[in-house]
Length: 478
Ligand SMILES: Cc1cc2nc3c(=O)[nH]c(=O)nc-3n(C[C@H](O)[C@H](O)[C@H](O)COP(=O)(O)OP(=O)(O)OC[C@H]3O[C@@H](n4cnc5c(N)ncnc54)[C@H](O)[C@@H]3O)c2cc1C
Image: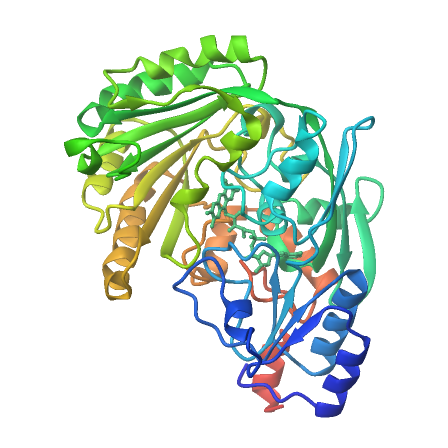
């Protein structure tokens, strides 16, 4: 879709009914408003409509449709591929819609779609409750949940999307619908793992669980020459660990001058991070073997407030740095895969980059594959390859490192990926078909029903079976 022309009269009319802020390219706050978390992204939207509520979302959708505008939807703005913004089109920005309401008696939270996990944790922890989110607290609830949602409570309580009771949504027609296990059930199925393909979620209703206020956690760093032996023992540990345990490995230089001293700062190492979703005493005991896999470089394990644990990684992912991430579900974690993980961590062009292994299984694997569109329940582990760097001159080397690592690691995978860790929006339909397998056709049927013109195309896209709006315009020269 080329540069868009917006009808002045319609724009004035739209601004007249819109309660939030409409930001144009010559406004002083335009550059701040179009910036997303990933500094690699530099898109120049024609307009940004920062919504104050559902009525604004409906107006923005209708305005975009009537003016043939490309649309991007922004929740927390943390998508690595920068899909929350677009060149020339309209950004429908929900980042001001951050309300969270908790009913402790029914253990339910209603969360507006611009909230971050920090907003959710703040409100829910006031009642000693939590729902599974992500491991960095300023990530958006909306994008993360619609793509699945893998966080520190995952093996005990499942994915974020497994804890949804309902979602309210504005469709491409500007209709307001509710999806739950009682209403629009097929849509509810697709929203849990199918991403932002079917409409704009305006709020989420989550089930809450008793968690905290303190949790037993581990964060222990080992030298990289111990990787194979330690991860072999780790693999054995997670096979029999209770579902309360969810862990994550980071391999890389991990150069943190506040955490390490002298030569240890720039030494290749790996970290095991995890928490226990249960009693602090049980957790301390159950996590202890992870602290004794070898002689650690440093061990920060202990007991801490759940909200602090949720924010422990925030500083490692500052806004505006350069990022390119990809993922692969792993069939297993054989010694040869561990060996390759060590190799790729060693040759990363940036000291800030890591190769990560997320433990899956537990409640994720126990979830019924028919209940939601989420595609990764079969995998015991998820590989994340994260290039994180500072200088634009180093873009090519970092992107190439991620792609080469992924190509090599495919030997340990069926090729399916986690939708929420895309480098750019570059992988297309083949990757979506590989990831969803036979489920893909059901997603296409749902897309045909809710978004037959591919109005919501700036995402990990499920193409409708008919010609999309973009194709039709190209063919007719409109
Ligand atoms: C630092 C960091 C840490 C992360 N940690 C985790 C983690 O622990 N676990 C995990 O599972 N993922 C994690 N992720 C990945 C994260 O799930 C995705 O980046 C996700 O897209 C972020 O959601 P957002 O709302 O911030 O995204 P945005 O960039 O705002 O939106 C991304 C896409 O989501 C869709 N979307 C957003 N809002 C809506 C809406 N209201 N309605 C419909 N569609 C919408 C749109 O397609 C949009 O293009 C992390 C990402 C980062 C950057």
